[in-house]
Image 1 (cartoon, one colour):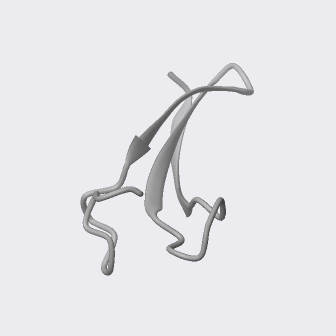
Image 2 (tube, helix red, strand yellow):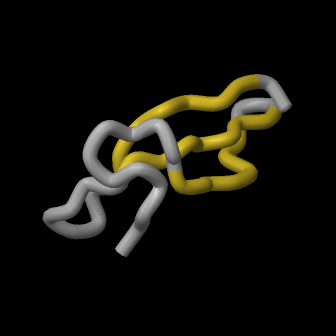
Length: 44
Protein backbone atom coordinates (compact mmCIF):
# COMPACT_ATOMS: atom_id res chain seq x y z
CA UNK A 1 0.00 0.00 0.00
CA UNK A 2 1.40 3.37 -1.03
CA UNK A 3 -0.73 5.69 1.10
CA UNK A 4 -4.00 6.43 2.86
CA UNK A 5 -5.84 9.67 2.09
CA UNK A 6 -8.29 11.12 4.63
CA UNK A 7 -11.27 12.75 2.89
CA UNK A 8 -15.08 12.83 2.90
CA UNK A 9 -17.70 11.04 0.82
CA UNK A 10 -19.97 13.47 -1.01
CA UNK A 11 -22.58 10.89 -1.99
CA UNK A 12 -25.19 12.61 0.20
CA UNK A 13 -25.56 15.61 2.50
CA UNK A 14 -23.86 13.85 5.47
CA UNK A 15 -20.31 14.01 4.05
CA UNK A 16 -19.07 11.02 6.07
CA UNK A 17 -15.35 10.85 6.81
CA UNK A 18 -13.53 8.13 4.89
CA UNK A 19 -10.03 6.74 4.48
CA UNK A 20 -9.09 6.01 0.87
CA UNK A 21 -6.35 3.39 0.46
CA UNK A 22 -4.21 3.89 -2.65
CA UNK A 23 -1.81 1.29 -4.03
CA UNK A 24 0.28 1.94 -7.15
CA UNK A 25 -1.90 4.94 -8.03
CA UNK A 26 -5.21 3.06 -7.80
CA UNK A 27 -7.89 3.10 -5.11
CA UNK A 28 -7.99 -0.32 -3.48
CA UNK A 29 -10.26 0.26 -0.48
CA UNK A 30 -12.50 2.90 1.12
CA UNK A 31 -13.16 2.62 4.85
CA UNK A 32 -14.99 4.75 7.44
CA UNK A 33 -12.79 7.23 9.32
CA UNK A 34 -13.32 6.78 13.08
CA UNK A 35 -11.32 9.98 13.74
CA UNK A 36 -13.62 12.21 11.66
CA UNK A 37 -14.92 14.92 14.05
CA UNK A 38 -18.61 14.73 13.15
CA UNK A 39 -19.33 11.23 11.82
CA UNK A 40 -16.85 9.24 13.97
CA UNK A 41 -16.73 6.33 11.51
CA UNK A 42 -20.47 6.07 11.05
CA UNK A 43 -21.52 6.04 7.42
CA UNK A 44 -24.99 6.31 5.95
